[in-house]
Length: 412
Image: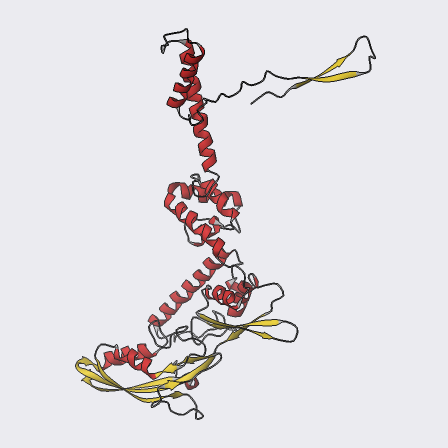
């Protein structure tokens, strides 16, 4: 680069001594770049050849150039220095884009420009032992960059996941946006969103099905029904399930940049979801959370068991098929709001059990005297926020029950 011109103050000895002129002494002008300048010369060999050619062209009277000549030595030093500067310029330029950046700090900084907190995501996934809420940010960044330096595949994964956030709708603008955003929460199995005019504005009502058909929005992890104390296996499975669900909630809130629930205060499911929705709802848009309306279903079926199967095994499989467990017909979230229940679906579920030869549906209706038996019709009609449930709990028959009658097979 050209030097900055120096300023000189000059006084006229034969004029006014208090008046001076400020002049600038300009440096020698840089030589013009000729038309034969090769702008593609960037490495050592190309730069060395180009400068040697310039020497030969400027001093045609000299017929012999050797590596021991001082001019050639200077040319090779300049070529080596220019090669290093060219490589440095390329490296600096490639750190400016997410696709070509290679340094972990550059990738983390570029991802932060599009709202992707790589530290929070890595901490939520248990990849690094850093807590952005309690530790200094610079320390968390250093831990992540050290992890990425040792695990470049994790950095490449974050490099590809970050830009995808640009195409995701973060705000609950429409009903579809609200349903999609709420469905992402670990506490939600299915949602139904509606808007209604309440006199001054549109109120958005969100009905939610929680991970268990018996859970309500005003329940908490400390108040939900637990298995009997005597059933050790069920208690341990329930404890593991609750612990995993809490971990999923903490990870989800951490990734989304939301406040993590304080389990010591026993927060309700409504308060957890309300804090999540508050971060994404539109300003001035009131939101109301609603529970699903359980519609108990009463079922009586008769199964014919194949001769080579035990009735006890078939009964256990049928109870699991009609229950609300992971593979059950009435699993939480499997049925939509207002979805009709068809007898053909139940019969197909039972016929899939190995060892069942035939199924006869003897009763199929909603719980209550006001609802007729629909065994011949084969369809129970639901509407609105009603969701079919069948907990088979003797203490609460209003939440549905089923009875299984077995014929044939072997008895223990």
